[in-house]
Length: 200
Image 1 (cartoon, rainbow, N blue to C red):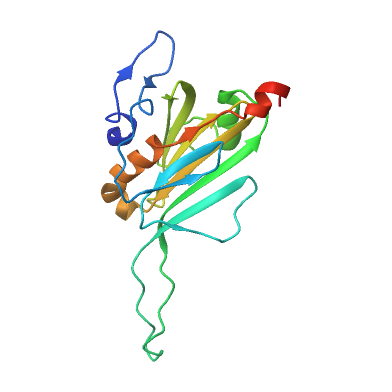
Image 2: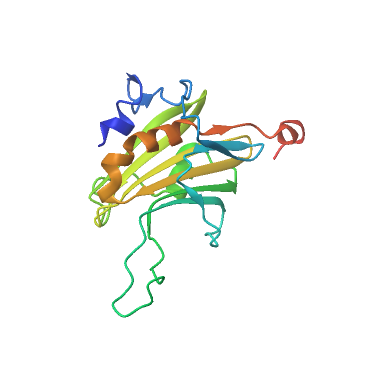
């Protein structure tokens, strides 16, 4: 497991018969000055300036998607000088939201998958319990057989489950570890005031 994301982020506390809990996202988030806070009244996350909003249609439940793209590809032989292939995404952030009444372990299994190592074709699939400003959450790290890495942060408000997913090309994992750390640690939720009054 990558201890730079799942271990060195903060102090690790152990409880008897419980999974490790990283008190990581409770710390103040020190993001660079040029980062942008995106989201809505109920949720937010900070994003670096190089990451661009992706307008392509997402899967069910997805509310926003940002991509970090590599340099433009060379034009094929014989093509016009101005012709270049669209740069491929080397990293992607998605935020999905579901209205449900699932508890956190059930929601994590339902939306991310069961905990296992190895898991199917994945090289590694590990999960820890974390705390996000007093809210219990789960953070799952997956190393895929194609070399790409994934992080899935699952956290719940009064009536909704949020899944923050970051996927990074294996070739860029080392360079983007700190960025992933800051992005995940910057996630914040606010309970729906109306739900607190009238229920879900």
